[in-house]
Length: 153
Image 1 (cartoon, rainbow, N blue to C red):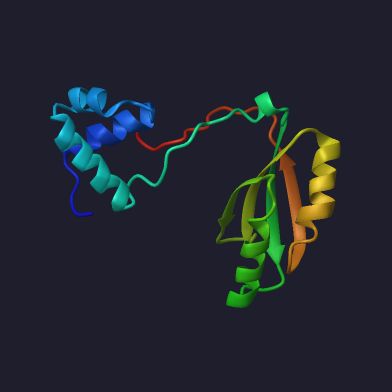
Image 2 (cartoon, rainbow, N blue to C red):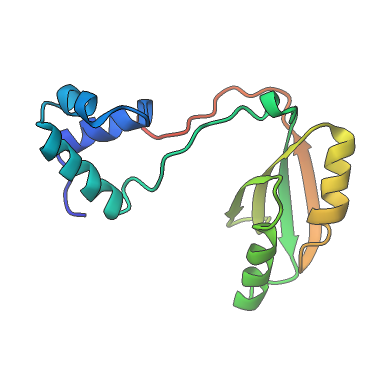
């Protein structure tokens, strides 16, 4: 998608605040006709600016009371090594986020666990079993200060 204008920015802000907003309400909010608004939204979706809609469910509401920040070092950074690790980590349902990093560690993960015993299971059965892992360093979040789902809202 080329340059976005103020109307695109208003559409993005509105759908980030309420992904379930009706097209009629969105059109009224950004000052377009419903058909023009629908076309704009379709372009934003097809161009990848909007890459999905989902419900943000509280991990605590599902009894996941612990968040671990996990630093992982691999045996090397060859393409095959990275690909095998990344394919395997995607299968772990407790891994919420995984980043390939520069610096001391190769990856940083955010992992949800019900409690310390559950994290031990995740560490033993999943994280330690990931291919090419040579070092795992886990830290536990004491309190969440901010968790923004979107930038600039």
